[in-house]
Length: 182
Image (cartoon, rainbow, N blue to C red; front, side, top):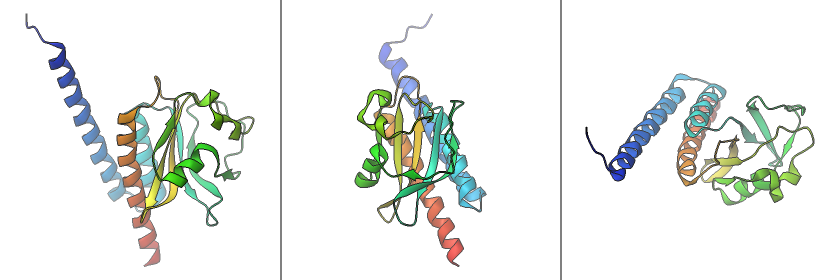
């Protein structure tokens, strides 16, 4: 029988997780190259990211032309009941506004009891925890990846992972805009 120390098991687990993260990031890059339009690559990257970090719900949205609201590209309620029309405007307020202002990934693991919940309309799907990552082009936030309901809550490692996926999604958006301008 082999005897393994706790550090050896932890190191092995960490290396497996790093390999999985690298593989999933490569999958995201392949999606950017595969899809000609932004919606397809954004959806693929969102699904990969959501699966990797263990969130069950979320969305990708772009900032409206006037900068006052998010235009939702797609929304995944994770099976939670939501009676709000997804085509209605999504104003930039609450924690989302902080993400646009700071340009940083932010999360709240007790969202339902936070100061931010007052910005959620009646009928909205219930989220225990949320994480938002900006999509930045030329250092300006032009959209968001929103994730929610991760069992056990979000952590610092999730910030690193979601940051990488938001950068890749922003690259896909920038490429799409350049192709449209040709």
